[in-house]
Length: 253
Image (tube, helix red, strand yellow):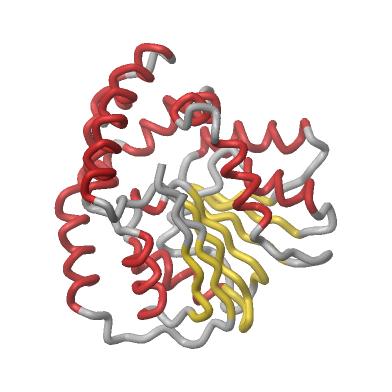
């Protein structure tokens, strides 16, 4: 799994002259996936909400918790910090951050009511309160310069990246930090082909194991193609720099 946490600090204004390679890539991604993003993903995440975390642990061969702990360890949080978890899903990251520092003001934003409902119950079981917002993350419902820390994990390949990263830049306070983790496109060609083969096998096994509904079955091939058209660690780091982020550190595992 190609997992690229990216830490960003000292946030200036984003640049408007986005280079053609990234603007063109985003056009290609939207052309390929617009129908799925608009019409199918909500149904997919409603379908998988109840078993989403268990399926991810299975898909990662049991390594997901270790990867998450490593990601959380990179995040510097202080008591009273305002934290936003974008595409928060079942609130796993928000809960992990509150375990690390209980005196946080954690906000979660996600488009899936079903995923956030699972996340709300999960947070309550741990005795935590996370402020939930159901919203399109391409237009974050928060004022400028509002958050000390923003996180985004396991969802960027389903988004219009330039729009979402620009919104994250907008809501971060000057000097705030953005932490990102996702399945990126492997830079090595051989690793990339082996990775897609592994994902193809998973997409055949997981729906049967967890009795996925028709929406998930329809999108099995999409989850592989979304990575094929996505970014490598270096490409995503360069894109962040073009959007005005600084002190960018990307790491693949």
